[in-house]
Image (cartoon, rainbow, N blue to C red; front, side, top):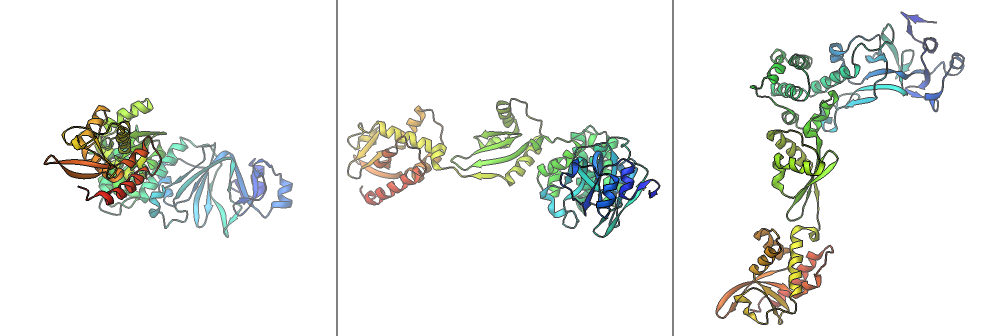
Length: 476
């Protein structure tokens, strides 16, 4: 056997220490179903002696560092490790421990891509590799013409602490260091970080102070000493603090993206439960807001700006009390959602005012045999059928009275716009008994659309009325 302070260097060393290994070509196992195959010494010597060594990670965890900035915070937060290795271009990039965590790859969200262009592994910061379905190339192998070598080997031991928690702090620190402003807004940046940690974790002020200070020092902030009391200030109710919206503003990204970073340490931002927004471009518009897994319909646009009113909808739709969100924070959340709002086209037939149009047509249809026989409509309420142009004439007051009886809400301006644009109605003025009367003219053809709900009905109205308008516009 060849050992260097007990460090395994060749396949037989790993096998004699009781490790399960698999032959690899560069980083890829060469055997099908390699996870299940156990290879003994003689087979290694005869078949795979020239292959790289893949250490199966059943019962083990490999902390695989893909971004060199992680190492700045490893030395601060990670407790001792007895098995560390890497290669010349990336030394001390693997930390081995006994015991398994859950597999996870820490990557900066896509919205922050532009911060990662110069890194060999792009957005990936660190990978927790563990379990029978994973293996890591270990010393005694050659990767891209570089020897994989131990930087330290005493033994592969369990971690003396909460490895998942410490790794999460390390990776969050790394991400925030990559994003650290080069100038200008550094103080607000650190204040916002401290505010988030104060509002959304159980960290005390000393933990927050240390976290922000370590971040500032290792991000090259020459005024790091000024950031030492950020946690103390954040815990002081009289001190102005920031949170997710301010950090998102500084980074020019969404609150959702910032919340994703802090989720690594278990922060559940109340705003991050609102994940999507749709606007249905009917008349009037209405909205759908995704809260957790539920789409909530909002018929009044003003309600989007009132979190108090929206909380009632959450109660009614989800049977739970809405999370507490300050008004200023809610405006930031809505502003982020509006940046990516999905615009949904709605056929005119499905719009609110088209339903009003159908009420008008239904009214005309019910009175088809009872139209006023003469133009006496000018002095009352009703519908007059002019047989010369085969059009129906009525006063706007007749229509609004109809809608009132049906308890249908409307805006007069929008009602008139819909009548003109989608029902082909034309405002006219006629003289009755030496008195001008203002009426609205509809083609009697619209009665064909009674009870209709097919797409394109509005265009059909328009086409019919255009034809009749050209024929009869000078009739009076």
